[in-house]
Image (cartoon, rainbow, N blue to C red; front, side, top):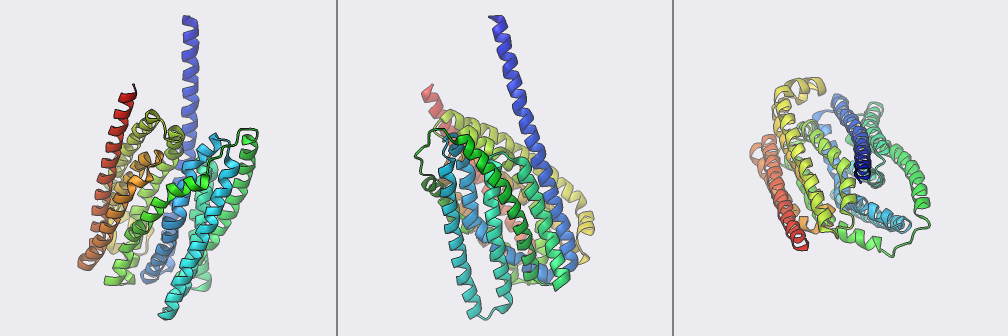
Length: 452
């Protein structure tokens, strides 16, 4: 009896070791990819600020908000739905139904994007805003290509193809900036030309993503053949899961884009350009770090939660995600201290002299980015339980307040006011999400206690 028990313990230890080895390798590839992606973005800022004036760089940043609209309102919710239901579809042996349902939703999303683009194009034409026409066309083109790639990336990440996802992330980051700089040098310093460079580089990445995904899809189809095919309506499930994300997406987009538009309204393109560099060097890297952690843990959380019908499994997911949130808060503190000590050196190393004036604001931007990334990570607890609707009210309210804060801050204090507004928004968002997660976790503990 003792010998059998010892063998069982040894076997369990071996399994645990293999599991942690796999997670370790996944973390290595994800972290390597994100480090190189972030490095590419930083190098891209260095080169772009060298060939674009703050005014033109500000126009490019405003054009990117148009591309962000398509991602947050249309393709972003589809990506979240694809990640959430990929594992259940594989587990049910029903991937052959899941993929066509997702494809139909992508076609509808494309039609919606093109309809919005036509309306905006006609509006600009009627108002004779000819200088914005080409930038908007290039931005919509980039948004579509980027959206398709994001959906493929989301499924490859859900399948835990970490090397493939890391490779495409690095290729996209370096390729977009290098292509943009090359076109600007060749055709002239223009925001639409730089945006076109982003889109052309994204096409190259998309071709590679399609090739890798087709190989994975065939392998998955073969592996699920012979299993009992479920009658799950994946399209309906994904729509129910995604529509709250799309509903608050317009508001969260407005919050994230209103800082630049508020500065344009109350100041100038020059101020927008300065703030955009500050944002990309401070806010973007720390949110990339948060995305790294989410990218690693989200498929694991969703697999553990399953279809979210088991309260014990879901509560375990909450406990695991809490550790991730604490790690992100600690890393945010380290990043803020580093930014406070090195902001002058970083700006002198990475950007043109015209942008130095806002360097001292870098630690505050890093802090707001880290707090927001932690809130996004905490929301995974609710998303893994298929409770995306519970995030609707906090997303809407904090986004609306964030927009108001951005415009008030820009009107009163310019760039300083916008940085402060973003910090207040991030703090409020994090506190609200933490409250929801704690409330739901208490409910699960009561359910488990009643069962046992």
